Amino acid sequence: MTANHTKNHKNETACKVTDEICLPDTNLPRVVIIGGGFAGLALVEKLKHKEVQVVLFDKNNFHQFQPLFYQVATSALEPDSIVFPFRKQINGYKNVLFRLAEVEEIQPSTNTIITNKGSVHYDYLVLATGTTTNFFGMDNVESHSLGMKDIRDSLNIRHMMLQNLEQAAITCDDKEQDALTNFVIVGGGPAGVEMAGALAEFCKYILPKDYPEYPSSIMNIYLIEALDELLNTMSDKASSKTLKYLEDLNVKILLNEAVSNYDGLQVTTKRGRTILAKNLIWTAGVKGQFPKGIDNKHVVKGNRLKTDSYLMVEGYKNIFAIGDIAAIITEETPKGHPQVAQTAIQQGKWLGNSLLKIIKNEAPKPFEYKDKGSLATVGKRKAVADLGNFKFAGYFAWFLWSVVHLLSISGFKNRLMVGFNWAISYFTYEKSNRLIIRNFKPKSLVNETEE
Ligand SMILES: Cc1cc2nc3c(=O)[nH]c(=O)nc-3n(C[C@H](O)[C@H](O)[C@H](O)COP(=O)(O)OP(=O)(O)OC[C@H]3O[C@@H](n4cnc5c(N)ncnc54)[C@H](O)[C@@H]3O)c2cc1C
Image 1 (cartoon, rainbow, N blue to C red):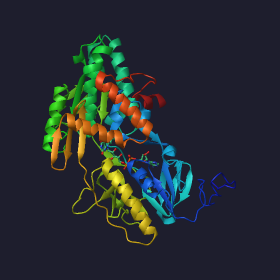
Image 2 (image 1 turned 90 degrees about the horizontal axis):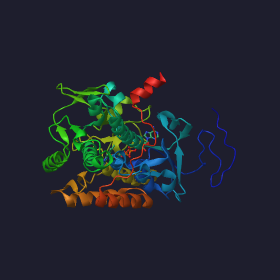
Image 3 (image 1 turned 90 degrees about the vertical axis):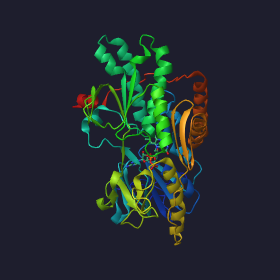
């Protein structure tokens, strides 16, 4: 490929011929950020209007608010309430550019990244590429189940659920009807717990109205967790309260059970238990994702990149990692920091300050994580909170959860839409987005058709 960028565009001078992706030429240091999640966007915010050229790459043209994926999946919110276009986010940031492209390779020896649209030179490179669903090598499970790591996954779950409930009304076969109305969620962390609670509320409040032909007992929700408690990163109080809340909502909780196989119809656990289900939602693990080109010896458990305390990837002088993909391994943090939004935001902001110092040849400070606590909701008016020494559950925790999440969503209109939807649903228990507007096909069937 040869670069052919001869025209001057509005606000952009001629591109460097070394870059195949058109970018304005600049004398400023170029910071390339891969990934506009919580970490990448926090970094952009720190570097806006500063003496650097920032180029943000993402394979999507929008930021995704992952903590509310389960609400899209269970018809409570529309996807556009929790995704936000990058170009709108960077409106008015004269030194920040967005390019829609998937980065495929990093070439540290030439300070270049290769994307599916061309290549770009960088002075500083920041990997903020997050994680993807980890099925722990179980191909059968992966090809028949759905993860929840992308807004498209949430929509797939919603369509799978609504289509299967409709199909259950059509079939006269009892076994088939059971499979269509049984839901298995794997993983008792916050994502699994929140999904189970929301599905159970769907079953309690929507099913009897929308599907009068079924008894509400027809929909069984199983939550499978390999450890001996739910929310194991939170306090014992939070774990036990969550268990009780979910049991009150009739969720069947299986602790100390690990899924070993799923063929699209039957879930099998390592201890030999089987459950008939055509709905399996996998929230049991994530693994880091990043383009090739980084030396494998700097990759640690969970496919994360080992960085020093300054968020610099080990072995490189101008490549940094932040958010879920980064693991600062020290004596205090032998497994790295928790893979949550707070870590990502704090690291993005921290690296912004550090980069500005590094560019001025000043010494940056090592990253310090401030644990602001954890919240998880189990359904309406029920949540658990661990805030330092304060551990509480119930209505106030749920209220706090709602406020924190509402304020964290990008975009005023999105906050308004989510707040409005929540207010309606608070009083009516209504989940209004129950339309089947595309035909969902399980991954295994899509592959079969293509072959
Ligand atoms: C269902 C769910 C619920 C969660 N709930 C909570 C919660 O309640 N509280 C909490 O604190 N945390 C929660 N988390 C975790 C939180 O969302 C993550 O810790 C956070 O998103 C990490 O931010 P990040 O910026 O590192 O990565 P991400 O937010 O995952 O962003 C990564 C970005 O990189 C882009 N990207 C990846 N690879 C490439 C590539 N090769 N080229 C171009 N672009 C690329 C992606 O498109 C994405 O935009 C939840 C996560 C999930 C999945």
